[in-house]
Amino acid sequence: MGFHPEPELRGHTLVVTVSSHDGRPVLDRHAYASLARTFHEAVVNDEVRVVVLRGLAGCFCLGGDFSEFLDATKHQQLIAAVTDMFRMLATFPKPVLACVDGDAVGVGCTILFHCDMVIASKGSTFRVPFVDFGLVPDAATSILAPQKLGYAGAFRFFCLGDTLGVEDAKALGLVGEIVEGSAEETALARARQLAKKPVAALLQTRDLLKGDTAVLCDRIDHEISLFQQALQDDATLKRLQRIARLAA
Image (cartoon, rainbow, N blue to C red; front, side, top):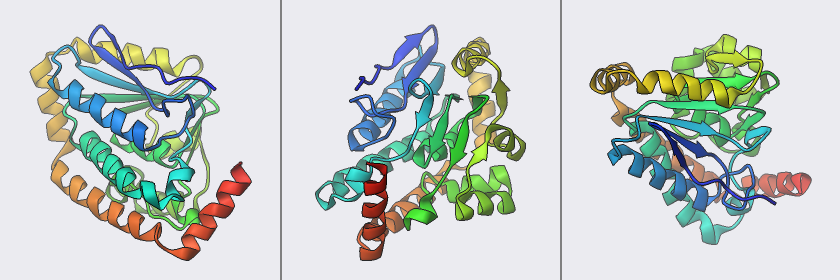
């Protein structure tokens, strides 16, 4: 089992790896807290002009850690960490790019809706199986997905839970660019382009394009409340336990 690479500042680009600290391609409460802390620090660090999110080799992120969904003693810490990270991501004032190489599942996919550009390699896939698990979407994607994909596209993606190939994800608007080679190299090149722009004009333009993020934060809180209720439902817990056993 590998280990989580620390955030790395390359010029004015902060490269952040989306994974657990023990090298799994999932997010547990510690990973959420670490991501939130990294974003908080990046806000006040003038050297950071752009953030690039990446996954582990061959996989962007497979979603949340199921073991924490099934352990009620961890729910309070998990909910607090998830809420802080999503709110931080929704209100983050600097450009965020993602490079996807492989699977982006669950929160590993919904996090992409907050990114200003998503660059993916051929063969990457995208899936949000929340409804299949008896859960609701997170990260304010109940607002962001219809905005980006259109209502019909968002309904199919979230309610049917089908896997999107990279070409379909681009056609719908989730992916901005498909590359033959390294998605990370292309994302870093785009980040360098952005970092060279006049800072105030770039940030002000992005802020105008993003609009009122308070609406997103309110929706994040509502989604988390529904998510927490679902984790207290016996039928949902049995479903999650069955899925966890199949995945083991």
